Length: 137
Image (cartoon, rainbow, N blue to C red; front, top):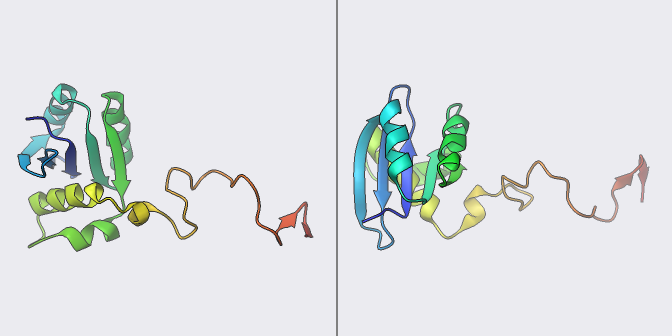
């Protein structure tokens, strides 16, 4: 059965994945090296992939998006509550998979309510009482 959601714990040489199907049944728990990671995700049907935001996550996000997957990066502080037992790569991958699957998108939103993908964009209209050309309105 094809997974609908995959959690990936990134490391230097060995990457751990945890995937579930649409019924939340575990499809795969695997340890992959970098070459195997490319092969695995190329052969996988497009799905949601979650990763902790870190230095290498942006590289992997671009790569997996080029294979047709939808990728979401999550800050480690939002993954930690989903770790069920001891800290290891397999448990972290499972927690990432769980965190990315939550319906509440507020976890990935900033304090201003905009999503991380919108954070770099200027708002459509400025609220009243803001500076315009250096003059308070």
